Image (cartoon, rainbow, N blue to C red; front, side):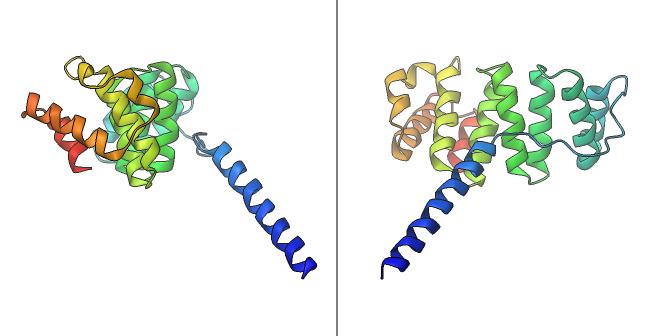
Length: 181
């Protein structure tokens, strides 16, 4: 019996260590190998053009070259995140968007995209945090989201706030997107 308890404790400890390692690596962007756009004169513009053409994998490479060249470029990171999200790679989208948010913490498009990607990954707490942040930083809806609520977010509270925003501005597509998500 004691051997079973010891083995179970070891297993649970190993699982905990593995989860902590996994959580620590979340949000770390993993660049592609062999990027032909490194050294390109204007990789951001090239990435935007490739995205418009629907060549998402190529757009990712060009946008990665952009953020390697200009690591503080919030727009480059945002576009890279959007491209990954469009390509159904929410983990990479989240990692890129987190870098965009570091460079520009109140960017509404980034906050909204982070909320959506975390929802897609079934990470409700993180999704609520970013969607609430979108409300707080929005010039029209900021008054709906009191700062003291930020530390204890519940789905019902955030849904109520977005419903209030929808009543304020029924024409705002972003609010309806969040309600749909």
